[in-house]
Length: 135
Image 1: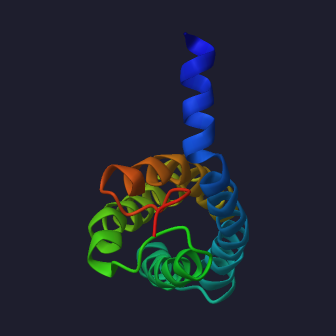
Image 2 (image 1 turned 180 degrees about the vertical axis):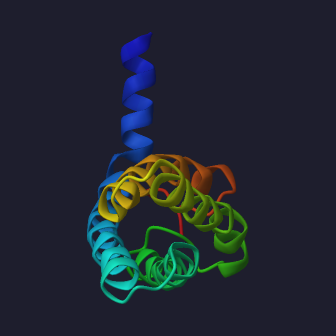
């Protein structure tokens, strides 16, 4: 029974998750670097700097997902799911850096990784994600 469920999950999500993971790795590294550069090097406030970086990453990921065939070209759905996660990222950056006092790079890493998995399943929940055999 558990193996049957595992196979169904694997067949439904494995290739999508690999593409999602590849985009995620690239954009995670970009996000961390940009957060560090904007907040620590340029001295822009944490809230403003992280909001700027998160917005640029949000738009870049949409086009990457579409180009890789991971999601349908439905920006409204992407926005509906995605608006929650960038706002959460900004909030988490403020909390980690300004409230707790951890480094910007560590705060960005924790925030991005935590939200990464939740967003993958949210795309599927709103029927944005393409699945094998679907146009």
